Image 1 (cartoon, rainbow, N blue to C red):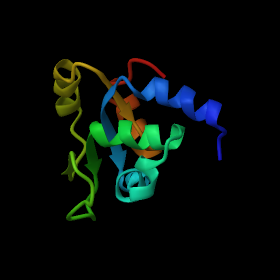
Image 2 (image 1 turned 60 degrees about the vertical axis):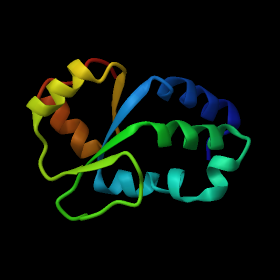
Image 3 (image 1 turned 90 degrees about the vertical axis):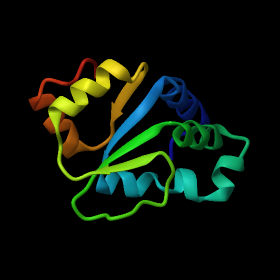
Image 4 (image 1 turned 120 degrees about the vertical axis):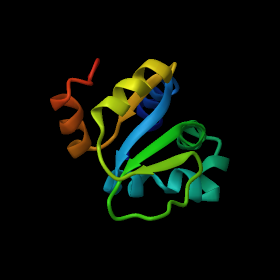
Length: 115
């Protein structure tokens, strides 16, 4: 596990994120940020991250999942580069891609502005 300094650094980076794009496996790893009641209540950098994550929109690309246990989460069946381009013009804040397969698709579609 990263120490508190690393977590605070990450929190400062993701504070500007308004939307996360996830594949199913990465999304499933992130679910406890919202569903673990002890995490967000923790007065620590991990609790801070959980609160940051909960306020952001999440777009989950999955052909398998039918429902999600987190708020502010939409399921998309297929990756649509044009929809992401549109989102980039309207999001107002940063969009973070959190999945290696999805990142490959966004690179191929020339949607990545910064790594």
